[in-house]
Image 1 (cartoon, rainbow, N blue to C red):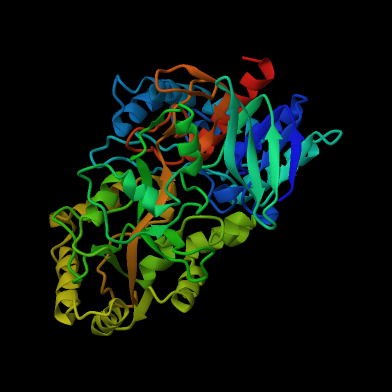
Image 2: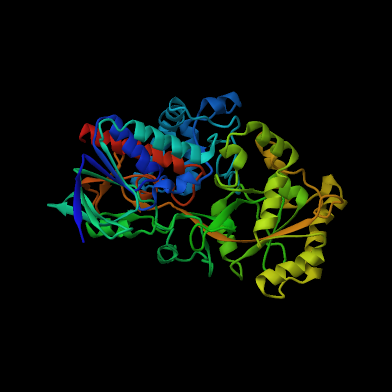
Length: 537
């Protein structure tokens, strides 16, 4: 086996968004950079290449145009309350404060300056079950999705490579971190195509390898005791985000914190054309769909409704008797509300086709519903509830869904509308009406109506599972993105950015995200690391 050597000023391990931004900023400051990534060159960018591109940003010009009076003070109160951060979360609190104070200048303004744009509406997500989440809309969507963002960062990084100062190694897996006298000085990587080794030396090593829950064994090992855990889950994270480098750092004295805190999603189904084993698609569940258990009964007594508290949704889904649930809806609802997170199934936004996006928003995205009905065996369509029940049982391989039970479930919901608007007493309908007060939500949410409304069919049932997504915990870092050991001391030469650092401090979000804090968290931690490296601090 041959071994070659590469010397640079900065070694970045991981080619996701955080790694790309770190490399870009260091190159622009004149540093020699080696970027090593485990995936193939065409998949450089990691999960960010496939993500939707939503960002929680504070007090932006777009918010002001929509007459939203936001501030870092309001955002921090929301963040701490919703994430349940306590006084002991010293570094996460520092990063939370840094985020709300700097997301406007260091993310929004910075991206605009680099030629990126945002869609012209701010969305309102994670409102909290009792109004304890985002007290106002903050969710900005990158025009072109996160794919455009990622490709632009790659373009800028390559353009900043003046005089061959960038060494880009794709298809290489880091197996060892090298250190001498307590100072990290590089790494050893293996070319997964031919098994050859390369020794990567640099006085600054930046870890940008993502989180841990691309490995379900790692996710299960860190699951918070007492929280329900389903027997099976799908994978919506990157399979290379397996926690192995976290443990290598821990072996050198690094401190992993909040490893059990994860931002999973409650409504995923298997990708019809999976990129890896267990690959799932995460839906943006229709607010108007009825969320049912494996028998076709509505989950309650408080119905499940998306957009208010993903953390609670995941726990309630995980606590069900079987590791899947059903979403019951009709074509009218699906065309207006059903969506899949990520760039792959948001063609109009990804390809920046605004007229077609506007048309599908106003008239319904029948194209996506038809596509899923054709491609996914977990997306069932039938003209009758009895026929739908038969298909649900065939898919599950059971006789759990009795046609009369499914019919009774739909009838009980529809009875709300037979009594008149003045006596509607259903929490799902109340939450839908509340959501529709905000213009962008009204465009994407149906006016409440009977499920069996004439002309609204056919009926649709989607089998959903919990899907892993992002790690909220990670290696503990200070505000310069320097890795700290178990007693809070800086580990010389070692930095950590993005999801690998729990988006700052080893867990800046606490137990919950205000949603959309991940891409900005990657950018903020990466830029902080680059500034520290360049300044020699």
